[in-house]
Image 1: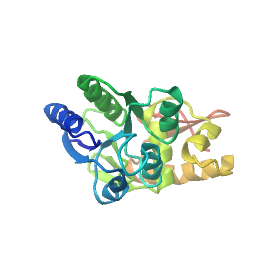
Image 2 (image 1 turned 180 degrees about the vertical axis):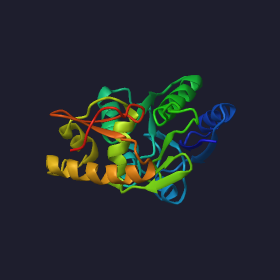
Image 3 (image 1 turned 120 degrees about the vertical axis):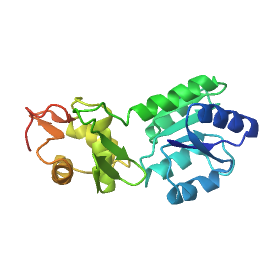
Length: 231
């Protein structure tokens, strides 16, 4: 059962959100103070955070940024700020989606399901084996085996994994991984990719997961292993 953390100070709304999510098969936890969120997430595991930007104690954008410093757990921001800049800031801080108040509770559940679907792939063989990513622990599972990645390695795989077969340039990957805009080179990305590939090869021997596209960058494709290369 997927676990959802609801960060919302409006008691009635939080209760309704929890009820709708429970009906959809989710387990929920609730916090109503912004100062509690980061420490709570460091001690507990959930699959998604529903985060109100106006929660008391701390600004939601600051909370979102702090969560991203140690976790890639999916975040949907909930906001009454209708200005586009606020929504864009939330996404730039690492949020995966946003919902503007007032909203339909059915739409909220649909958004939650849509974000979680991005972390799953169809079965790749007759045994229904899947590659599964766990953002809270930086672990990757395939069949009954799992490995643990570094934060950067996980973020690289997470970015590629969410959009299978899309080619990501090294520059785009640097923008996604190093959000503080530190200066890194193409070779930094290549080095992390090399280490990531080595770990994935231990998890899935004989199957190439991250493909190099000459002169363009990298793409994720676990199903097609007849092309691609190293580099």
